[in-house]
Image 1 (cartoon, rainbow, N blue to C red):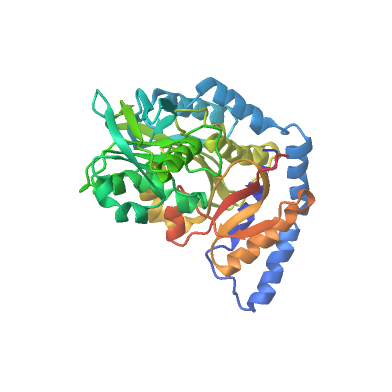
Image 2 (cartoon, rainbow, N blue to C red):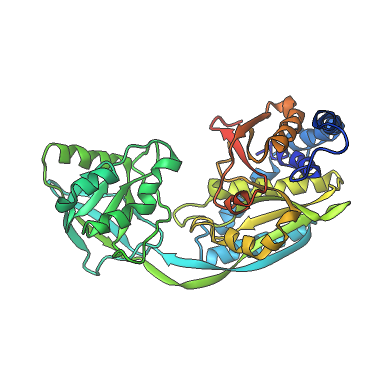
Length: 427
């Protein structure tokens, strides 16, 4: 996390983003002016690097996150822990001396998983590790006992629709990448219900596993029966697939006590450093504060939230005052489909022309290699120039495309967006 200062340099971009780069001269000449201006920030870049890597801010974001995660723990949408996390951050941002610290109300889903377990009864007794998926309905109190059908894709399920009626569908879909494979988690229960299945179990959306299922949100459809659904480990999905391939009958008992309550009040948490010249124009940096209930949410997305906070702290510590307002937003209920971000967008979209760039960190807090970017070609050229200031730490790449649940609303409206990119090699 000691590289969090890279976010600051994007604050240079709004001087030109979303506006014509052509004055009375050619674009090339004007762009040369821009390059020269960016190069003039070399000393400031060095000061931020020194503070974050070698100075008093070294490891600060990590320590802040560790205290937060240890103190608050998991922060599921609608939970008391999420309320405690928001209060914690509100106080912490005030104590840090940031400006305009405030909470913006939103309504968020409130789902609790309750008791859950699964047991293979045939061909042998075997405890299946499961995690119910968000918004899943419960089984009947006595549970569901049914034969299993294993499929590798939605296409295979449709071809075997007659076999699936009255059974538990187990998806053993090959992992391609998260973006492509996650549709089995989000749509698996609906597709299984369409062919008359009584429940669905989805192989965790992960490239590997140590007998550990992964949870996540899933979506029902109004005109399709709601059936219980959960993720299972890669190992158990593969085992049942092998059994099925050999023609072995598989019977599973599934019990889930999930409950869905009315939407709960919550908040997006906001803090700023107000711009010196154009305070109405916004450079937004963000991460989401909520998490799932089966871990501490340190990586997803405590790390992203805290490095976004650190970006403002570094600027404040150096006594810098950006031209535009640098705004931190800690979203709520991202895991449920970006609920907090959507409501924030609806509230602020009438002033969308004031949002020069929107940034999110939600792809893991590994050693950074650069930024993913979505925007026009001229803005991309500027971002590339800005990233050259990070050459001393080899964080200079600008990748094609930046997306994220919390920033997609802005991207669709043409606002430039960036997302932090990194490798799994820790520094």
